[in-house]
Length: 221
Image (cartoon, rainbow, N blue to C red; front, side, top):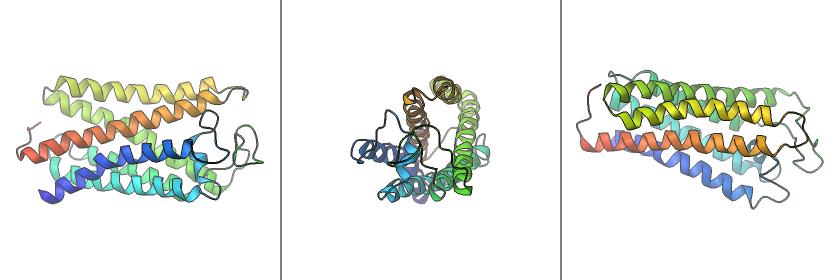
């Protein structure tokens, strides 16, 4: 059980670590404006390795969390699909880190002022990584909605369901509000909100499961 708790703790750390590094870079990276430029652009430039490492390390931490979740919950409700989806979430982050996005929105210096025009393999795979992250995280929310509903834990069931509904809503709004290319700020800020909500939910879930593991006798679904 000690190993299981250590693996679950990786999930507790992952979200705050990712968010903290984003905020630090947002306001210290020369020439970067978080009001205009999506966080993936932090992977570019001389200091891009910081965000690349952020994506990959966070993905590995959530992958470890998925293993701990499997050890704790399998074969009960949520013990199969929950870990698989959180593992896919972590894998998507790693893909987004290994394959960088294309310059755009005015960053780095000299880049197009609007949506990136480059269609390289790296750009496409970065987008695929983001797609995996978003879909797997939303699906995981509803897997755990069912689990906590079965445990009669209404607060957690509602919070999981609300998060699962909010994430796609934020994503859709980020695209709608950015139409036209004249005011890119909503795209950037809403995508940051999506990350803060989604990554934050995953880490809070890790806190909850750590408590179950520490108690030594988790409730049966």
